[in-house]
Image (cartoon, rainbow, N blue to C red; front, side, top):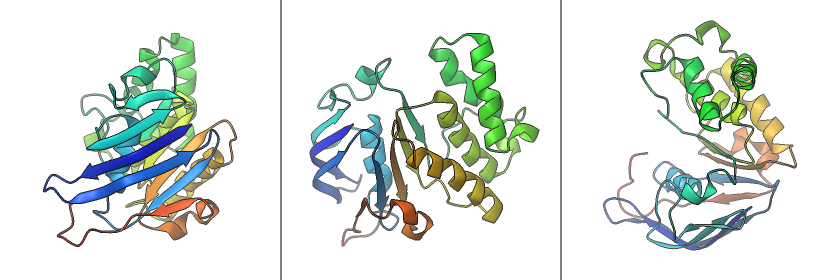
Length: 221
């Protein structure tokens, strides 16, 4: 599913975050990316998602060239990719419900299917009570869960999660972990999780990489 060769990325200050990284994750496989803040975890996920160009290197998703190339554009309509951001990622002028439904409408799904998937995803992440509110009116945990709900509703082949448990209390972590564990156990879904706390995902530890912090001042996430 994921084939990366010689991927090199730099921080805005010129510090090298990733240098000639090779990476391979088979279809249905899982990968845990760990490391301290500023080590390049988020940047790697954005490169894999096709939203950020590496300085050099090549990336193919399901055999489709992403870099060098046009990033995520060639994946549209060919690979269903779900990306949950560490922060943000929601449209502030839409309710949580509409944020989850919007990508489904872009897929051209009929209204009943959009409504069903949206409702199921919101229920799975315990968001029904706040579904009609906009992101600014809900907690940070609800926003993180909405990002996960949006991914869930897409029924993606490739799931990229950036610090999905950061800032969640015990109850909210349990809800998120239940979903992530289900994704990890699905042989038809490829999962990449970036997180500082590797111990939160012991069932992913057998396939993990750890990024090191460069010797200069760390880049804020």
